[in-house]
Amino acid sequence: MAAHRSWLLVSFFLLDLLLLEAAKILTISTLSASHYIAMSRVSQILHDSGHNVTKLLYESVYHPDFRKEKPSYQVINWHLPEDQQKKFDNRQRLLREEIMYGRFGHQTIVKVYRNFGNLCSHLLSRKDIMEFLQNENFDLVLLNSLDFCSLLVAEKLGKRFVSFYPGQFSFMDVGLPSPLSYVPVYGSGLTDQMDFWGRVKNFLMFFDFSMKQREILSQYDSTIQEHFAEGSQPVLSDLLLKAELLFVNSDFALDFARPLFPNTVYVGGLLDKPVQPIPQDLENFITQFGDSGFVLVALGSIVSKYLTKEVIKEMNSAFAHLPQGVLWTCKSSLWPKDVRLAPNVKIMDWLPQTDLLAHPSIRLFVTHGGMNSVNEAIQHGVPMVGIPFFADQPENMVRVEAKKIGVSVQIQTLKAETFALTMKEVIEDKRYKSAAMASKIIRQSQPLTPAQRLVGWIDHILLTGGAAHLKPHVFQQPWHEQYLLDVFLFLLGIILGTLWLCLKVLGAVARYLSGSRKVKQT
Image (tube, rainbow, N blue to C red; front, side, top):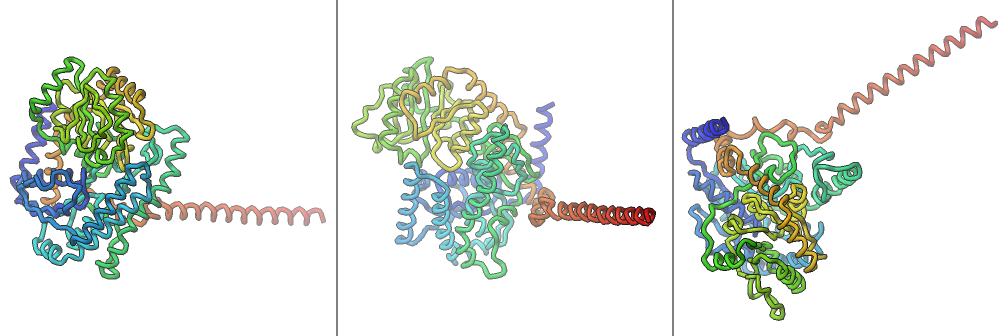
């Protein structure tokens, strides 16, 4: 029955493809690292499905293997003039160091977006690029929800767009219903199972979160004022709600169950690639440890650059206590010269992460908790020990712990002995592996693959002329109507008016009765 239903769904999507002509789709990528990887993958999927894809790409030093890629779709590269580019890169480097050395906070995020706001102003002033994009007459724009400049580009072009949300919803309000009794606010560290004090904390943090979001979005105010005519200047928070579809790089294998609108589509696992055999030298290393297996350590391209000598030393010492082999993505050029590599550890500049996570001998994944890495671990049923550093990583690890797939270790308190004990616990306690396999089944047993869902829904709105039928009217209501404040005040007025009238009538009756008694007494 399930197979028959899956076949029918695939058939409907294939029918849509036959009826639909290839669309011209613009994808935009100005953010780096994992955001760049996600948008490249989405662009390739749309191109492979038959659409004409053009990607507007900001060249960044933080794009992994950027110049090695040879995509089959059109890419428009742009960058700042050399002097401005150096200033921008220096500011980004200082901010990344600020993040990595334990000073990450809201004001750091504000500085990051202020830097990207200035970058956006330069892009919008590039008449050659903007005129080219306008003349191409794209049918649709696909953008990263956290790349606010791409929202302004889509608005400038006057094109419909769909959003790809790269992480958990909690980082930015995109208009979804979020009951505070069981939907945790970003930064709260809460799960969907809150006690009384948890709900109090979540309620109070909602107001703090709302003010912080407004401050982040305000970093683009000067760019908007400069490039949009007065009277037609968009509001970023409103643009976030204009997306025809909202694709989310997660699903309920990791995320907490919550209310969604019909135009919200989970595509967790979208970035997963076909598994390839691992190189022979890695296979030889793994074989040395027999049934004990191996541990994969990958802390992301950005984090790995800024690990301190003390952290590397403690981690290396902890790995030496494990019976497993350890494959660690760590550049040899960054390895401290006075730290002797543990005998069971192999460091490499790059490792085939997906292929190693799929290897039958893997026992544990030590990760920074980035969404792409967490998704890959879930895809292959591998338990995790997370060392979250910044951004969505702590929030992702809250969900990993809540699902019993792994545990978190704080970088500020990481010590070799306790870190080794934590890893041994996750490896030896079979409940973590069972939970990881359960999440894997939840993800892989869905009727359509993430790529099929992405392409199928985009084709759907191209065929139907948009997603007006999927978006609730609430997006067009002022906030006082959304929260029924007008209704509440109206009913309160009726109640108070009725009470006032009743009191007046009772007062009049009381005066009348009092007057009658006085007349009788006389």
